[in-house]
Length: 232
Ligand SMILES: N[C@@H](CCC(=O)N[C@@H](CS)C(=O)NCC(=O)O)C(=O)O
Image 1 (cartoon, protein in one colour):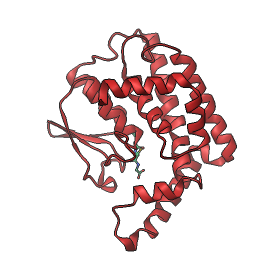
Image 2 (cartoon, rainbow, N blue to C red; image 1 turned 120 degrees about the vertical axis):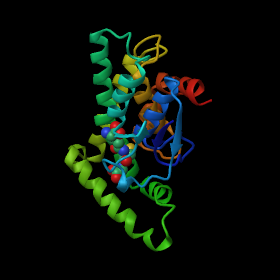
Image 3 (cartoon, rainbow, N blue to C red; image 1 turned 90 degrees about the vertical axis):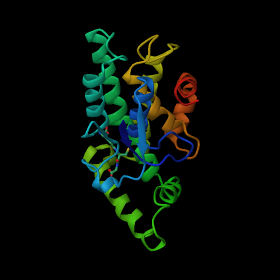
């Protein structure tokens, strides 16, 4: 059976990593059998990140490459019906979520001084007491470098949240009152959108990012529907 290596769930979310949650949601949406292993050491993951999977003796890392592998191996029940133009729009939306909006979520958890104490307490709770001061500092420094390398980290806090507000508004305007992002049927874009939005809307941490998402009522209603359908 396929094994999904991902983080232990926290904050009442299926996963605090939008990429792990996306992949698990995709597996549920496509009714593929899987088991979860939360004991993997992220430092030893094939690409130093989670999720990755093991299936039929193959190890594959990166949620998007895994989904491509699953489509090739088990078929494509979610996206096969999309026209090429719609598939292109769905891919562009996924990139907006995963390559831009996601990084604002990272910023809000790791850099926003209001939230860092909570993030630190939860993410590093398993560490022995001695390491619990040092490791979060080193990890935070890496995240700062990553955000700087991405480019987002070079902006001021208000600019960062302004950038995310435009992304969220675009998602809300695109979703409108449709059941799913691409219409009446769920697609891979929904696995991506739901996972990132549910993480943003989670009420453990507050930030202008979450405040904006809360204002866009169709996004919260959509997340409630996705939760009911795939995680009830
Ligand atoms: N492109 C990757 C991104 C995965 C990713 O960024 N995972 C984060 C958690 S959300 C991670 O494992 N970070 C650990 C680290 O960077 O050390 C995917 O789609 O799977």
